[in-house]
Image (tube, rainbow, N blue to C red; front, side, top):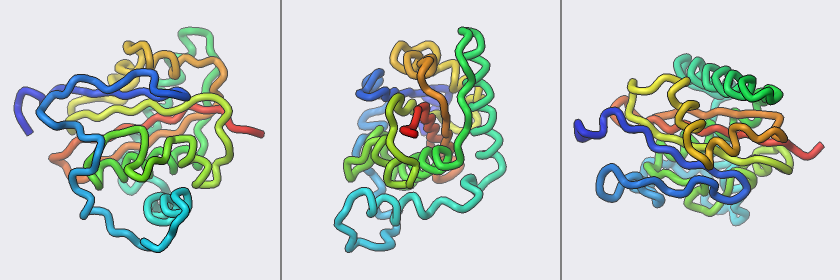
Length: 207
């Protein structure tokens, strides 16, 4: 990876529609919205026609019961949740509560992007964060959406990731949405030399 991008963080936001938009590219053709390494994903069942079920079986079910395969991933996710609530507290907003199902959906999307080497709020099969939550059994989202960031490894603390969301109008809108009640966070990179993907879900679910 070029030296000049060693400290770059890139962020996308989604709140209902895309609230942030795509950033400027830091190297030609990257980050890609279409997978550059589709062969790295082993398809467990290619016969499934329903896209939600396909995602559940081939992506979401790959995430282990404990959600995070590495202790560092779990610690980072927990710190991002803590930093998120610290920012919300500054604005007298209620804290958001972590839900395991949202952590699973966020981690599944981070893992999928890292594995297939793409970056988008939608999967290559066209599923949005709300559809992925539904596919995983999390229910229907009534408010909120997804923030996303990528960064070079070992260059950004969880607080820096959340600060990045805070300083961009689209991410800030979702981060400080008074109506979201729950959070899920995913953190994953395919190898130590590849981008780290951060996925933050901030939603309220239909009761």
